[in-house]
Length: 231
Image (cartoon, rainbow, N blue to C red; front, side, top):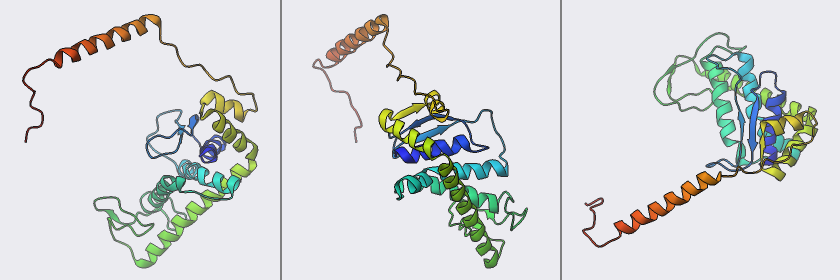
């Protein structure tokens, strides 16, 4: 997980249109083994083709880092690959961003978004099998080109990739300030101690615990049982 998340962070940092990295962690959340938080500097309502292509490169940074640093790939990129395929397909089929197919849209939405590359079973077909094959080919080329760009960026900044991965193994989580320090070749700031609860707040919390225990004791006294979920 360390190299995977480091890959996302480093690629995003050095991408021309990448969003700033605010947090990198290998502490699991839900089914994810870690995550990299990138936040835009300003509210965005539309995306350019250049921005979308950089988004694809960033999403593939984790898998590219595993491939480059470990010589192996894992299932950790499954969500990234789903998102990459979906964005690339929309670029080709909905947003007219394919150089080969031009400023056209293909298919009309029809219910749930269920996709297999260019053959979108949830869209009403208004194109031929030949065009469907071209859509498949264009989506594949966009994704493969983005993957190669991710690997190239990581090879150029391999030292930064290793630094971030090592720091994650040591600290598990990096703040924006810590990540930027690594990118700039500066020593990592000392870890921040956990915030101490003020004495007055601690006393209040202790009093609330006692009050809760007293109420629960009152409720346990003999009496008619409440009816809960009676069938």
